[in-house]
Amino acid sequence: MQSVFFHIDLDAFFASVEQLDNPQYRGKPVIIGGLPGDKRCVVSTASYEARKYGVHSAMPLTKAVELCPNAVFLRGNMKRYQEKSGEVMSIFKEYSPDVRQMSIDEAFLDMTGTERLFGKAEDTAKKIQERVLEETGLTVSIGLASTMYVAKIASGYKKPFGLTVVPFGKEEDFMLSLPLDKVWGLGTKSLERIRSVGFTTTRELYSQSSSTLRAMFGDSMGTFIYEALRGNKRMTFGEDAKNHSISSETTYDEDMTDIYAIETALMELSETVLWRMHEENVRSRTVALKIRYDDFTTVSVQHTRETPVRTADQLFEECCSLFKKKYEDGRGIRLLGVAVEHVESRNTPVQGELFSDGSTKKAKVEDAIFSMQKKHPEFSVRKARLLTKK
Image 1 (cartoon, one colour):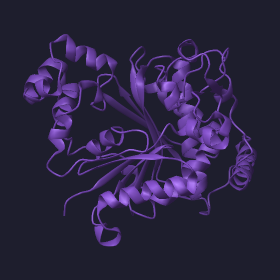
Image 2 (cartoon, one colour):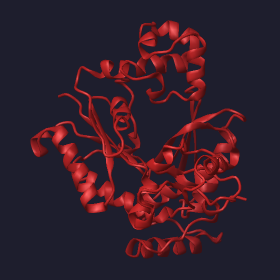
Image 3 (cartoon, helix red, strand yellow):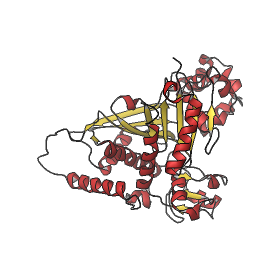
Image 4 (spheres, one colour):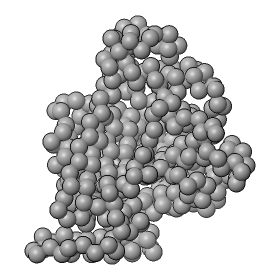
């Protein structure tokens, strides 16, 4: 049976939620991440109106203010974004038994074998787009392909509210039709290296053998380029969906080196994971961190605690500790991922602690906040670090 994958992106998600909730922002450039004058802030999301000015995620907020001074600048409301994300993911789960949520605003759906239930995959993709728009007020873009990697690229091909279908057997043709900067995974520094040795098109790289590319760019990058231009048939994403784990990861538009920006990204990922743990009523003692550098080298590290993670603060602190142990100073980061593994139901009995460290009280407060915001999404409670960077 031929594999069929959807990769679905929520279009300019944080900004789109703000435009949905605040009609006065519609049609205007909206930039989420901080207010002009906030120090050391980075752009979290920019609306399509703002992107026309060159604003993108992970850009320093000061630069975004220079490029688009008349934009609507907002610090954002993570809990509201989590709630809207949950609404969309619930729709996805009605169409596939294997939904792999990669981050707050993207997911893979394994649609293999579902044509008997829903009809042609392309028609199903259109139905999902229509349902998301009708039921949540948001738009999604979908890539449909036989490999997860090609589906991921295809979802960004026609944004917003785009649908790109790459027929089986046409994966390589699709990849070779792309300019180099549209090959997912190639960052600014990687593109500079490729162009510095004379390559300007995907076809030129495709004509090189795997050994040649590895000799030119190193084993990790050379192998990635060779496999990517052939559709990356063996690359998979979100295996945690099958392995009793919950994770969130983000690939950044620009390589990150600023520690404060990196830690802020870790906090956002931690909040996403904790929110999903609340929704699924699970807990975990094992925290894992993934780092992908600008040369495609990927490292991971994990730590198993004596007691389960109970609060967002605890998860964030674990992630920062793991990051400090594993990060190589000065290297650009393309991707960060946070996961909790071997999750179990929160109803499972657990041995009590002899002494309290205050986390029990914090956990009860977070539970109350989660319940309140589930019922009343108009309420906004956020971590201070995500509001203001000093």
